[in-house]
Structures are given as C-alpha cells and as structure tokens.
Amino acid sequence: MMPGPDPDLAGFERLLRDTHRTVFQVAYAVLANAADAEEVSQDAFLRAYQKFSSLRDPRKFRAWVARMSWRLALNRRRANFRSLRRDGVWYAGRSAPNNPEAEASAREFESRVQEHIAGLPEKLRSALLLSSVQGLDARTVGMILKVPEATVRSRLYLARRQLLKTLLP
Amino acid sequence: MNACLNWREELIDHALGQSPSAALTAHLGACAGCSEALEAWRQKAAQMDAGVQQLTTAEPRAQGPERVLAQIQELSAGKPLYGRIALAVLILTVTVVAVLYRLTPAKKVVSLPVMALSGWHSPTEALLHSAADPLLKSVPHLGEKFFETKPAGDKNAQ
View 1 (cartoon, one colour):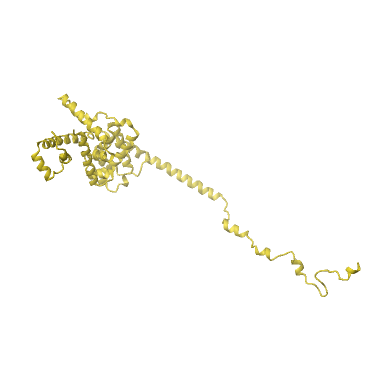
View 2: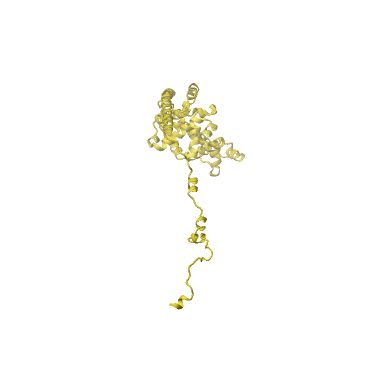
C-alpha cells in the first residue's frame, strides 16, 4: 500500500482512540470472530489514515471509518467461511454459571436468536446488528448503510418484529 | 397463555413498544389470556434484544490503537524513500529525453495533405493536347495543301 498525504497524526490518534471500540464491534457484528474483527478494524484505520485528508468534516469520522470496517468485514465474510463460526466470545463476558440449567437454557435461546438473525433479509440484519453496536445511533447507522435515519428505524423495527415472531409459540 | 388470534399482530407490536390502540386496550382489560401473553412476549422481546446486544459486545484488544499507530509510523517512515526514488527517476527521465531531443536533427515537417496536393495534376491538361497538335501548328504556304491528293484523271490512265 502506498501512503497517502500525511495527515495530522495527533488528531488522527485522538479519533482512533475514540472510535476504535466501535469500529471493532462493527466488524465483529459481521464476522463473529474477534481475531478477524481485529484485523479488519486495523485495516480500516490504515485506509482511513491514508484518506484522512479527504475527510471534510471530522465529526463524521466515526461513521466514515465504521463504514470502511463494515465493507471490509462483508468482503472478508464472503471470502472466508471460517469466520461464520462463532469463536465463543459471545459467552466470554459471563460469570461462571450459578445455575447450570438456567445457563444452558439461556444459551439455547441465544443460539436460536443467532440462528434466526442469520435467516433475516440482509437489509434487516444489517440494520439490526449495526444498531446493537454501542455508540452507533440510527443517524450514524444510516450514514454507514447510506440510507436515511427513518429507514434505519423502520428496518430495525421490522427486523425485531420478524425475529420475535419466529421465537413465539 | 393463549392470545386471541385476531389480536395477535397488534399484541406483538405492543410487546415491541408500540402504543396500543384504544380497542386493544379495552380488549386487554377484558381478556386475561391476551394480557398474560402480552407480558410473556414482552419478556421474550427483552431477552431477544439482550441476545442481539450480545452479538456485538466483544471487546477489542487493549493494544489495538497502538498497533495501528505503529503501522502508520512504518508507513510514514517509508514515505520519504519512496518520494526520493520517484523524484530521481523523474529527473533522469527528463534529462534523457532532453538530450535525445537535442541530438536528433530537425526535420522539415510537411503535413500529409500538403504532400498529396503537390503531386496532383489537373485532368484538363490532357484534354488540351492531341496527336494533331504538330499538324495544326504548321500553317501551309500559298499553293500548298494540307494533304497530298492524287488527281482524278490518273485513275483512267492506269
């Protein structure tokens, strides 16, 4: 990769630290694999650095770099089927189960949710997953997906509705 | 927990946070099954939202930004070298082209249409000349004829 124009590194570093977690989680929402998401978010930041001088409004940095991460993650998912496998991080943040039966039931439910999300249409799934990333509001999700904010809200509602219906008896 | 079938869709919307219509509110006041189903579906929706949230709650490595910055530093360090090589190649190319241009003798440039026009002859020139031109140019003197003819009496003499 050839480097682009030399941006203000200090300014870039501040934005990088502010948005790193969000950009990683956007990639993780697509790839469901922490190692792959790390690589993709890193790649997104390097690209962002190279094109940093073309960004007119620094306030849009979060959406701008998150979109890069999103696109790169989608490309990686298409190219790499192993990323479809969950690597266990879904459960990583949990404490040791006090009630193994309840824990098993919760895992089964989450597994069903995950399965049904995979069955949603792409547009609804994208809106649902991106909206669940902390720090991304509907407006930012709209900027990532290049659709109006109202469309994001509408798709999010439809996705939740479709998902709930599949989980009901 | 049996919801009335004709209220099912509205109950789902209500469980997801939509405001109920007046008719649904009235029905919920009268139907224990629908009220019970609504409560259960609200819990299910909350579980579902939590499950979706879990899909993106993985945390990145703490050294992530440092790794990105290190790569940026590497790129920046390599940048002046690329620039110098590119500049040297450009200067060399310009010099070679200039020298070659000086060494090449200047040629008179004649455009193709002009060359074609210089070799063209009008077809009327051929029409102005004929095989009888020398004959026509010689004027007969007094008593001379253009053509020698035999007298008419010679035929009888033979």
